[in-house]
Image 1 (cartoon, rainbow, N blue to C red):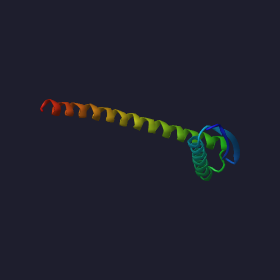
Image 2 (cartoon, rainbow, N blue to C red):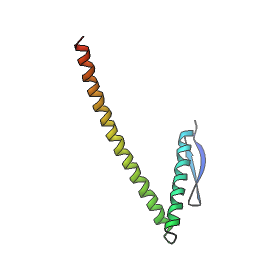
Image 3 (tube, helix red, strand yellow):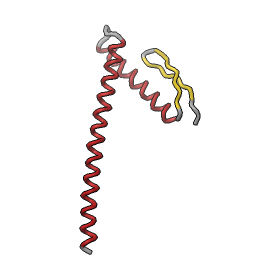
Image 4 (cartoon, rainbow, N blue to C red):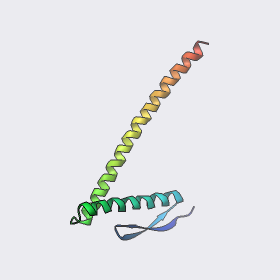
Length: 98
């Protein structure tokens, strides 16, 4: 797919973007939705705060969530590797007992 131009809106400001796949477009649109949703929550909680401060907290929250998800994925990856090793040992014992 050739690059496609899309426009997303964050905090009532539009941003023209170029994406190279429908999946990337969907991710960008979902990300913009999430940012705007979180921004709405901060607008309710902190109506007198600067937009830049609210956007900074949105970015901080999203980054923290990403790092937490990466940690969970790393732990799960190690658990899978351990399970595979244990399964290999178990299957080798079965094979050698035949």
